[in-house]
Length: 386
Image (cartoon, rainbow, N blue to C red; front, side, top):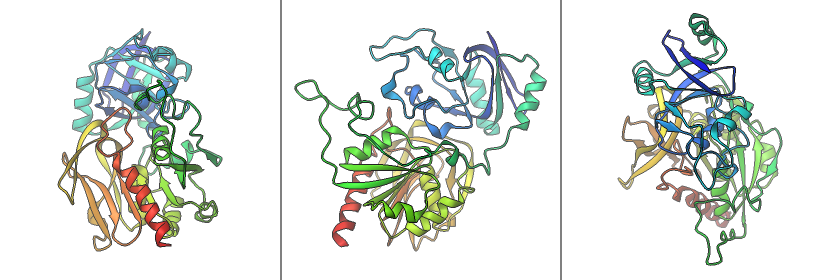
């Protein structure tokens, strides 16, 4: 079937439709990762976005339940050069085309993704529409211009869990099927260490692999909705509080700003991505929107204290303005070497730190896995000091 991608500035791309028949809309962004498309599909941080993948062939290793970052895809639509109609992998359970059709995600392929990415790089991310049912490009451009902008939109409460739950680390889908963990001599996954610390994780769009990484640090994890009050979190008697990744603009998530201010200093706190931005705002900082965001698996980030460079996975459209933070109170720990974006901070007197990038990347670089152990160490020291 034929498909059209229409951008709000009037640029039109015509191609071939896959996945679900119909129409979708959202902010069009591009991701430069060479692999891990299923994790991108199911990352809640992509809610409200149409994702362009720069790797020219997508879908060739299929999809499987173990690689999901959430229970379903969150991308609004997918754009790719080639979309494989078949899969070839011993881990594949379903062809990517069928998988996205099942969850009502339209796909457009056979377009010049290099030209599209250059257009977005030059002019910035913009709203767009993918349609396999409408051929009037002018109408689709008008629809793209009518889409609500990401700026000022709180999507965290939309994607968040509605109930409190404990992450079940004994569920094979949550740990034992992880292909990144070396098998023991009997061919089984190693058992998790006994959990001796309790982490309460705010779900602003949390990824499964973050929860896996926390459990590998011998933590029991309770996941709570985005709007859970500070008082209710403290009533769960956590040893530490985690603030997750998520979609949308951090500025309108005012309930989180207030809760973080109440919790700061009461328990050790670690934030990733949107969690990092929310911490920055709670500490008095400001955020701003990047021209085309950071979306990919090979961004170099410098540790400011050691000078070491980590290769990191990124997925963010907003960033914290370092000049808006009181550097007498906040240490700037990580900087992106491509554009000097602030990628990490640590409070100088409170047990609180965060990073903008994704240390749990799966697939992706593992240079920053140490941050989860740093969080555990911070919780242990806090308990001893109390």
